[in-house]
Image (cartoon, rainbow, N blue to C red; front, side, top):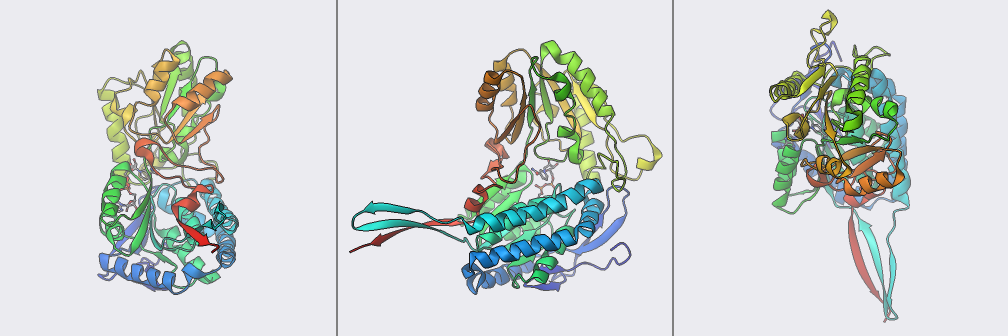
Amino acid sequence: MATDLSPLPLLIDGKSIPASDGSSRPIINPANGATIANVSDATASDVDAAVTAAHSAFVNGWGKTKVGDRATLLRALAAKIRENQEELALLETQSTGKPIGSSRGEVGYAAKVYEYYAGIASSAGGETVPLSANGIGLTFREPIGVCGLIVPWNFPIVIMAWKLAPCLAMGNTAIVKPAELTPLTALRVGELALEVGFPAGVLNVLPGAGPVAGKALSTHPRVRKISFTGSTATGSAIMSACAGDIKRVSLELGGKSPSVVFADADIEKAAASVMSIYDNTGQDCCGRSRYLVERSIYSEFIDRFVANSKAVRIGDPMASDTEIGPLASSVQWNRVDGYVKQGVAEGAKLCTGGKKPSNESFAAGCYYEPTVFADVTPGMAIAQKEIFGPVVAVIPFDSETEAVEIANGTPYGLSASVWTRDGGRALRMVRAIESGVISVNSSSSVHLEMPFGGFKQSGIGRELGPTALDLFSEVKSVFFSAE
Ligand code: NAD
């Protein structure tokens, strides 16, 4: 990959083909600025060819296959992904900058996602409703058809699996549009799917620009559903595009997730939860980018949190002891740094970080130090905007009511944490916070078996768990007369 930079092709109808206009884009390693590959950039006419192939694969077979046969293929794909774990992990680390240990874990987890949906799709039947003596009601889950799966760059192989596994398990065909920065593992998974026997056209992979390939996908009349993960602004544009022909749409969007720490909490444990924001260098829609801390423990908490932030090991993503690597691109670095400068200008106190680490070995990469702001007020940009970097805003509060008000005071509602030893308060907070996912005395957000998605502008629909099957099927109600 590092030596041969001829453009990697698109995957359409089981064939590897270049973009129709011959265009491609370089894939850059954010740890050192090196070009690691060139990848073909799909045009609107490539999207049309992929949709035609996916439609033909759907009507000519895949939509009617036995669920057990689909499950067997999904399990075979999981096994292939595990067999190729090291290669996939390396591709993921070289294009995202995430530590190699995290990439290995994410590749293994993606395999588990395919296995999980192979299992539950087989038992996802319908209902029998005894409507009257003269007949019964039956419900069936039918596939939707051709689905466009638009994937972001922060967890490429994982989020592709969240969408693709339930999509294929329910008998749909797919066009995956990976993010511009990170198409390599998507293309490789597409090849592995062909190797294990998925028919041509069932899975097509089209790297390309969002405003070109992504837009063509979300406006194509034969695409029946778009599943998207990314920014709220792009999610809104996609929702408008899908409105034209009432495409099904599910959206997993941004977050500004609060971690609310009460004075009665285990403060040491809460202050040790720094990876809730720094993991993946803060490029995580569930990252706890706001810590709301009861005023009586505010300064003690800041001291502990800052000390723990300084101890996070930033470094070469290929080193086994690195906890955080660089941001995913120079665009992202500038975006993060812009918000940090705005925080300083608005009067927040920068306690640590706020710059590229000074060590010479970081000079060519998009590294950013773990950054803590204190004395933040809820209206500041750093307390409102999804920064998507290793930057946390610590905000004081005086009462449970005020904590809820601040926690709910952004347009987002994806994830949250509550830290307290008072069970009643924990329950009141869990009910009051407008968020799709909440953890108590923990920062965990994502569980394969549990629904995942957001309130308000954090999205529509719930991925993961059995609810993802609802996102990739239509329910048909049938009355069967006994007369
Ligand atoms: P984005 O939302 O623009 O990109 C995500 C995906 O959408 C990519 O595959 C992109 O090609 C595609 N896309 C872009 N424009 C499109 C369009 N008009 N139609 C169809 N598809 C389109 O994200 P970005 O610009 O790469 O990042 C900007 C910010 O978005 C980040 O700083 C972060 O705040 C947020 N973000 C959030 C998530 C998340 O998991 N919630 C993921 C990535 C980025």
